[in-house]
Length: 304
Image 1 (cartoon, rainbow, N blue to C red):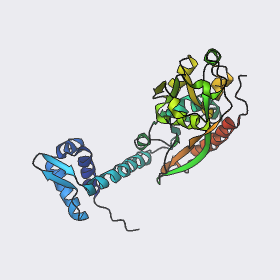
Image 2 (image 1 turned 60 degrees about the horizontal axis):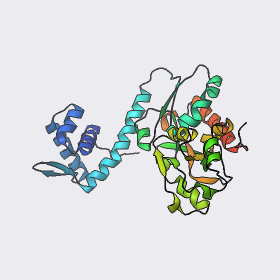
Image 3 (image 1 turned 135 degrees about the horizontal axis):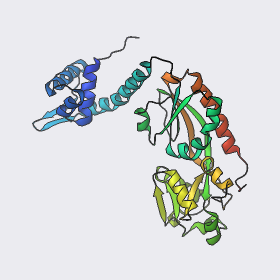
Image 4 (image 1 turned 90 degrees about the horizontal axis):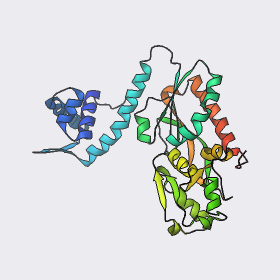
């Protein structure tokens, strides 16, 4: 395949200048002169036959075509950097680097991870959180566990399952508020993860309640914080079955209603090109599938 690629140093100069919309800042980042940045960008514009920057006495501004090109180049350069890092590992890497959505890392994966490690005692595991897809682009990971991600051509995306949502709260609050039917939630403080702000409206709609009756709300940037607030009796949180089942079974939370609503997105495993053939990655994914299937298939949401 004959790829029409410009020199990488031109591309790096343009991407840095486009990010900053400033040639001097790009020069400082790349350790060259502002004149060198300007010359490389001029060469790139001639190669492309397109103007990438508007030049003004007080600085530069990306053109529409320049901004589109810059937005496409950022992820591509991140991929090159990540692939280079992996290729530079001289010895076989016995470390499995896992990235995960904070809610999944804290409430689901961490409590179970020792079960997988028992089957691979020689393997070192590093777990980090990636709250947004942009964080994955900057992560040096072998496999990622996420939710609500669009397709990414450079990542193998294995859909696991679609979870169910339902309200949960502390046993004391359920008793004090006499939660007998969904309508009893009107006037209660409703807790949620700010990344999943639409969960409550979806559940209210399924329950036949107008969303206008959602009056008192508290949002948290971490789902585990919303769960702990509910355990402390501060309100009712919209629960995801895979993430709250353990808290229900140990009596920290109760599910006062029977109505389960499908979550709007699926949990997925994401695998970059460089780790698809690693036996430890495929082994982890197989274990993950089995554990998650078991988690959502658990029939009882009652305390043990």
